[in-house]
Length: 169
Image 1 (cartoon, rainbow, N blue to C red):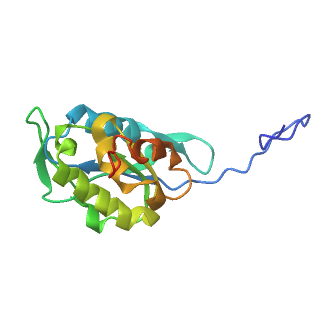
Image 2: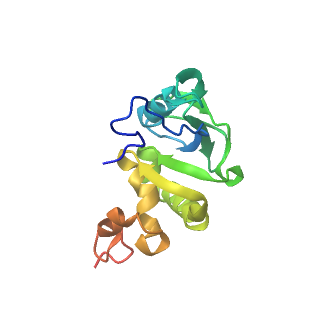
């Protein structure tokens, strides 16, 4: 059992490495559920990492959080809250975590198709993808064959005859 610490020694030394904030991108789109965007935004924005000395400092964020959209940078939530994204998804590279919020806008075929097409073309730059509630509508159409290992949890949703398959028969 090793946790990086010497057992039985009078002193304990761990190799402490300063970490770089991971890039979290939250997808913005018209008629999303604002809580599905702001909840992850607040959670990831408040996380902190340890510095090279092993101390947690309020000035070192654990995550760089970006709101990015497929189209126009300004959009409204279902309740009418106006949100302005930092950038377009097409300009973002090397994403650690992509979060797709839910909302009635993602249930619109044009919106989910546009996002799933972007994911199909960009998944190599994304380490992991998370969805909130109906955000799954933007991911499921990509199909399990389009995702790298580790994305198999959604295979059952897009299997032939499944709720997100092309073949509903």
